[in-house]
Structure formats: structure tokens, C-alpha cells
Amino acid sequence: MTTRSRGFSALALVVFGLLVASTANLTAQDRIWSALVLATNEKPAKAIPDSLKPFAGQLQKVFGYNSFYVLGEKRQRVKEGDSEWILPSKEVFLHLTALNKEVSTYEMSLDLYARKKLTLTSRVKLARGAPLYIRGPQWGNGQLIYILEIQ
Amino acid sequence: MKNSEEKLILWMDDAMSPPEAAEFEKSLADLRAARADKEAWQKVRDGFKSHSTIPPAYDRDAEFLKSQISRAVRDELRVSAPRKIRPLPSIARLVWSGVGLCACAALMSVIVIRHNDGVPDESAFISQVIEAHSSNPSRYGTYSFTSPDGRGTVIWLDNPGFIPAQESIR
Image 1: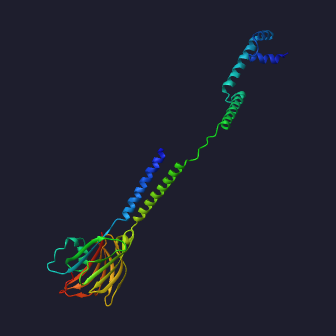
Image 2: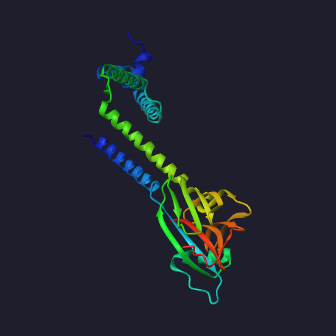
Image 3: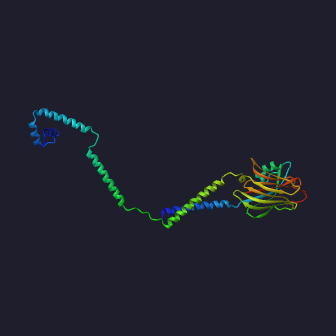
């Protein structure tokens, strides 16, 4: 093998390595974190749970509550075509289907059932690090809130 | 037979042989004056030679002839020299050239794709609600926000329903 041929083979290996690395980046398994939260106003305000601390400022400003309880949370892989019931409970259900993966977003359809009644159906694009909040039914003196985030 | 003027010119140019010069000098009426004239003429002639910038005609001809000969020799060498024929590239070289070109094209594609990936796009930063439908009598609103706390999107149901506290939701 000549010196030129060795140079070509080395260049080809480098390029294929870059391609493989790029492909791996695109097919990385992202995960969706979902939580069902009960928001209330209490005096004094309760401590924010650890898993909600990244969202505490937004929750307080958007929904106007000072105390939050995590009723359930889940973190799972996002696969195109997969359909999941997110945190099913006796009264509220959120059905999530991953439709399509784009460069930086996941397109999903979601159906929210309250007391076995379809309350909301929607199609959303979830971006990484930009949570989606869904204001759900009221429960007692609090508000149920769904949080979805691609991590 | 040379006349006296021709002999005089030859004598003044020192072009005579010594016996001829001696015989010619005997024929001169005033040899001293003639030698003074000869000496003056030789000074003038030497002066012309030393100050002349034009090379002698025979030198130009010689240089021209020399250059023509060297050019002819070069042309002859050029024509007679065997032409260097480059061999056709081998299959292996063609294959490796193709691989190299493909590698360059792939590299450029990766660079361009990554560059495009880096272009800021609104959908890359904020979650979006493409469409939503709500059952009556519920109403809803959607909005996205960016704040110092981060980015977020909200689906706001105005009348999402009520679940009594006595009923467990878990």
C-alpha cells in the first residue's frame, strides 16, 4: 500500500468516525419526565420537593400557588410510535403518544381524561429543557398540574 | 602595385612589414614630420577605439551565429528526446481516489449539517402546542413564555372540572 493510499484510508476512517458519532448523537435515547403535581396555597408555604425545584419559580408565577406536592412522577424513554398512560390515577388520565422525532423536538399527541371524560386532546412539540404544563382539574382546595419535560 | 597614398595609410596603420616600412621611410622627404603625424593619428585612432560603445561588427555576427546554433541544438534535442508518457492510473489508485472524494464529500456534509443544526430556531428552545381541542363546556388557552426561571409552555383549561377532596386520585 502506497503512502497516498494510507492517507486516503486514514481520511476515510476519520470521516466515517465523524458520521458514526453524528448518527449516535441523533439517535440518542431522550427521556421524558412527567409528573402529576397538586398545587395549593398554604400558610406557611411547604418546602418545594427536590424534583420540583427546577420548576418552582415557573409554577408559582404561572399558577399562583405557593405549595406543591408530587403525587407521582415517571421518567421513561421516548420512542416513536410508543403510547403510554402517564401516571394513571382513579380520576385523571393522561395518554401520551410519541408521533415524530425532529432535530430538537418530539412531536406528541396527548389526551387528558378527567373523571373518565375526554377533556382535552392536543398535539404538541416538546423541546428539550422547555417543560409543558397542563392545568388539570381541581381537587379539593388545590389544583392538579401535569408537567412534561424532555430530558 | 600600391600608390603612394595607399602606402602612406598602411605605414601610418603599422600594417607594413619592417622592410617595406624602412623602404617607404627612405622615400619620405621629411621623416620627422611624417612620424609626428603618424603618432598623432595613432592617438586619435586609439581614442576612437577606447570610446566606442558599439561592438565590432564581426562580434555581433559571431554572437548571432552562436545563438542560432545553440537554438538549433536545443530544438534538435527537444525533438529527438523521447516523450515522457504517463502511465494510466491503476484500478487501486482510482478506487482510493474515489474513496478520498467520497470521504471529502461526507466530511463537508457533516460540517454543513452540523452548521445548520446550530442555527437558532424557535422550536428548538420552546415547546409548542400545534393544535388542541377541548370538550364542552371546558375552554382552554395556550401560551409559551420565557423568563429568568427558564422557558415553558402552558395549556390552561379554564374549567377543567372538580374532584372532591374525599375522592382519592391515587
